[in-house]
Length: 395
Image (cartoon, rainbow, N blue to C red; front, side):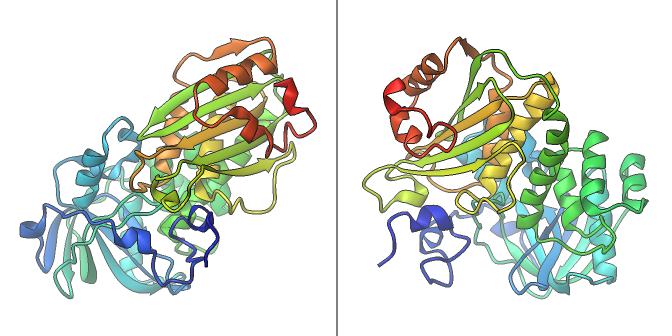
């Protein structure tokens, strides 16, 4: 008998129930519109690479292929505001290819994958497969959906690969992977491009492949920690501020409070939402870090914790202030399939594009938060590390 919150903690990735694959994800089936386009070969633009984690350190890796003229199909930063149907339609047209490689492989395939990852635009490639692609669209709580997949027999790049000088210089410098990732960010490279380059094995002393799922969270964490070194030295904000944003029935409220940096994130899963279909009451999952940061991985929230924290720290870094931060995320019934942590990242980023509501006291700010979510704020306070020293009756 599994614990009622097991699906929330697992999110289909850790197999806590003992199954070989997530039984909830098996129910999700999207019929791709590309069957007539698929064959045992592909010629067209390749925008990125995908590196799996199964069998690590001998994993499947390969370039992706666009089976559509819409370049946004591989650009999560452009998806915010699109409905479910559009995102899944775009992603069902992204072909994932794979070849078994060791993470330290220096094969020709890995070299070509790194060129594709670093390219400033999708580069034309010619791929031959061992057999025709299979058509099941894959969903994940961290990685954006993928369309058909095929095992790669051969790959060749059909044109000169355009690589920005800034990218080329960073990759060629003798830098740690974390230093190189942040340098690319400082050079205004898109965060999703940085994740792809890191995953391809082009960065760092060891030059090893990094599973895509890991590279996403790693880049979120690396960039956040580098910016926090500055944020911790900035003046505190002087009032209580609440920012709001919602997308695909993910509802965020972000409370900034005067004081030295602290961060607490809440995920509240409504009964009937994707990972909580078995629950009769909402499940709140909390993660916290003090001023000095945390050492343990935030496994109760996983990648969503790091994606939300990045958006918050980007804002504080931009306004040159520090604050105590509480992020309230309510995931409601409309979030019917997981689309990846880009949903979290971009929704939090969007919150800071809107004006905040400002309050003189914490009680007033929490009252405003309470009025705009389903679960009473007192239920969050019961679990809060930041507010545990205050009486619930104060709010």
